[in-house]
Length: 169
Image (cartoon, rainbow, N blue to C red; front, side, top):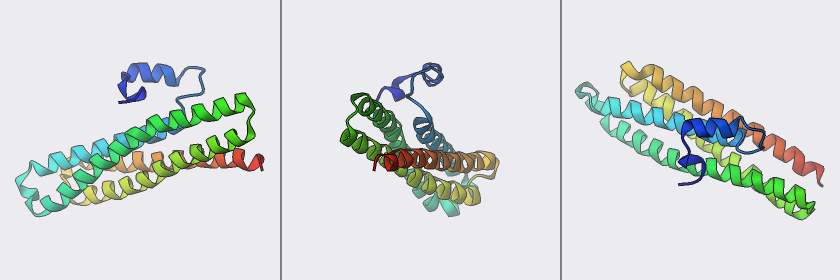
């Protein structure tokens, strides 16, 4: 477990709101995806316990398994995003153009992966909203919206880091 994932929510909020440059939007993008995956997992659990959803049990088990896997990946990416941007800051301080380029490229790769996973989560959220426990429909929809926000936020990080990289060429 990394630094971000070992903090309480209160500690993380305090760090996020500080004047330090990390953690920032990239970490929050990944964590938004983690929350989306957790909601999908919850809807699956609420569906699997109900007898009247027996026909979709196999699909729900698959969605559940996928959501848990994506949540793990996004949890790791939240940590990686902080590390990636810390490397960018360090490279700029050293004024080493090659190190800056390398760090920026990595700071593009991490949110790119977050974006891909978020798009997968949106699909899982949509699927569980159609077949899952109807009493948890608002939770499934919230998962879709959070996954979408996660992907859009990651895209913003990709854009800004690409712009910085292009200025170095």
